[in-house]
Amino acid sequence: MKTWIPEAIMKWPEFLSEPLKELRDYVIEKREECFCIISLDLHIYEERVLFSLELDKKLPWSVICTYEDDRNPYQFEYYEEDLLIVKKHFLRGWLEDMIWDRDSRVQYECQLPDRLEDIGLGSEEKGYFFRDESIGFSIDSIRKYRDKYRNTPFKKRKKRPRYYDPKKSMTKLDNYWYVYITQDLWCYYYDRKPDKIYNKDIPFVGLMSSIRCPKSNETELTVIANYITWQELLRDYKLNKSGKRMKRRNNCLKEIRQLHDAAVADTAIIPDDVNELIKQISGEKRISELSGDDQNKIGEWIEKSPKVQLAIRKAQLKYIRKMTNEVYEKRISGGWVKNLAEGFNVWFTPLWMPLPATASEKEFTRSNLFNIEEIGTIKISIKIRPTYLIVSWWRDTVVIGDLSVNFSARERMAEYLPLGASTHGERLFCFDELKLDPSENNLDISIKFELEKT
Image (tube, rainbow, N blue to C red; front, side, top):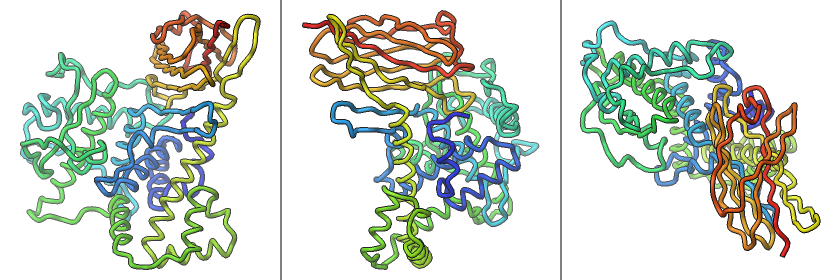
């Protein structure tokens, strides 16, 4: 499976914390999950949570999604993963950890009760899990998600499973889903505190806040969020049967928060040489690449100082991000190639390899911003869809020139197709017309800019 983070980096021991590695290995063994998918789910989840424990100091999604190279003064290149894909990984990671019990090393996935009345609900009631949708509609979606995704091994899943029955929806004319989640999850899903609180309690869970997802391309996000809310409800229902509030399971999120609180309370003064080692781990080398003495020193401080333990884990994640950036700098190498021809200056972009995050992902967007010395900037955006793609461009140049695009696959080379000389626009290309199948071919994209000599 191809992902924006190379599998070789995912196999590093420090790619996930020790508690999350235990969870990853459990999921792979019990559900035959893909190593790359579950690793990304838990990595994005840890990165978002660990750097966002203070609500007013969240790690922005734009940082998690973007890999940048600004070392070339004449060119800024960046690779931007689709935010929808990244949030989908985050929600799946949240779900995996929410039902995980570190003490017993087992996931407890709650099942629906025989009678909804036992938890104070009726299947025809509306507005509890989806705004204006019945509880029966919500239940139908969690059953489909459970059967088609969670209970189906990775290699046997369909590429584009359907988790909703449109005929059962009461909001067919609406463009958005509104699904209710706990305020705790809401704060991590968005980059701000909840601005609206649902004014009707869901039994056992309490006040909820809604997330808004376009029906056109975020349906799977709503399914996962809905699944999480049901797990919250059913877990609390089972815990509250006795009428007493029982203790939550010891999952990885609880451990991360405990470590953060302990680090805040830690009064230890970290020596300069330890701070220097933390700095090296953050940007220069892995712990395994330190000298034996330095590794021992780091190990001793991790044991006695929560502050150092948290700082080391953050440094490891920063180094992983740095190495991921460098991988993409190599993939998108070379920049524009200036080639003098009679009457023209010609610039060619390097090849893109627009890759989906998962094997089933068929809709995503890639963008690049190119700076051409003494000429200006050109931004190109490629929207990949199941049967077609759309090329959009925005040009801010001091001279006129023609843009054209090339789609080349592994087995063949296509000609450059004209986009025109306008400052902005977009053009749709069908894969049938291009004689390309993105599911079978390694689709590469490049842009040519031909500047008329003045």
